[in-house]
Length: 133
Ligand code: FES
Image (tube, rainbow, N blue to C red; front, side):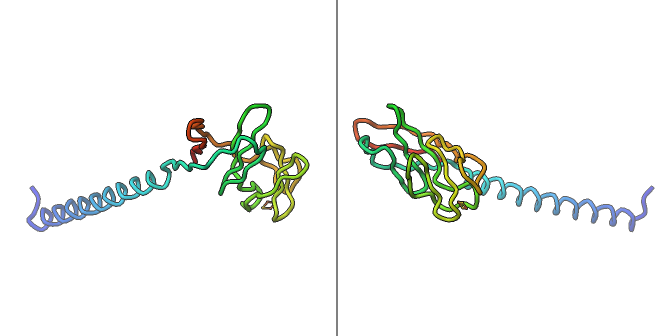
């Protein structure tokens, strides 16, 4: 049989453990909600000019080639500078000179990884492109 002192100590330990568990799950829940908000996909809508081969729109590069459209991230895979220039069928990073072909493959370093490809939806009626980031 437990002494009164031992019983109180066990009750205190169980209560303290319950409080810690509630606090942990409360924080965990808030972290999950924040994580979902951060990772929620955003959609960016831009006017679509089908006469241009290359369009730079904020963090994206819209490339029209052979009747197809491709959207790449404009963030250089070296250190993240925004690519904003195309020359001789190459996308050029202004920071350290990396270049990429129009499929997003690195053709000159220091970048070695390809540019991220983005999903998009074209609205021909309104002449817009919605890019999912
Ligand atoms: S950030 Fe583009 S080459 Fe360095």
